[in-house]
Image 1 (cartoon, rainbow, N blue to C red):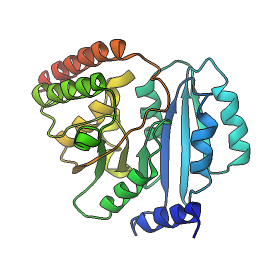
Image 2 (tube, rainbow, N blue to C red):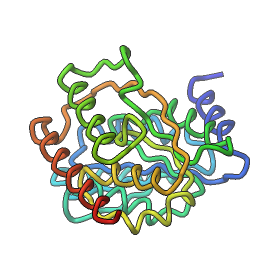
Image 3 (cartoon, one colour):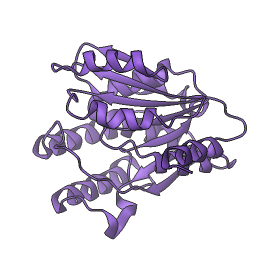
Image 4 (cartoon, helix red, strand yellow):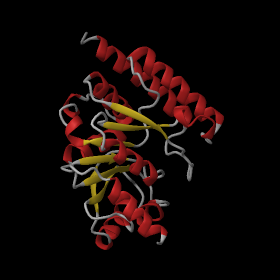
Length: 249
């Protein structure tokens, strides 16, 4: 059996019996350099019932045009466009628009189908609603630069200390029953980079069952926003979210 056919079978077999549709939501911004090379291999192995929706937000390169060309060639691909760069709003829009039984959230430079399969298999259990990928749980297999790992550990400490989160990561890929989070989405107030964190923390506070699994990232291009800008903004947003939750207690 070829590698492609094997992946099709693995995805199909991992799908829970009570689910028939899966939508993969991928926010993108100025990704013309990797858009086709990342999407096409995945689109070629999606079984029936699986779709990818790319949420383009504020791109100034050829990302939007390339997406339209790909949509003509691959029926399992859809795209939406937002006028301004806003990662959190792009993710939230995709979740609000989705009608799939299961939603997978992933980044274009990741698209980890092995993680999708692990997540789908966990959703087959009655005690898991949301599967969160964790860079922290990768431990010694985390191959990112030391400064990136240090930043992740710092943010994890703040998540636990200020927000009471009982996990290790809130960013990164997710596999979730859409019905489990649909009532939480309207309550998420913040966008930009903090939306994934607010979503997962609110989910945990609402009693949604979250299971973390390790993910092993490989960097294929520089991040759109330098770490020196991302970390201060993340610290600010976690503090804002802390004050928001505290104001409701």
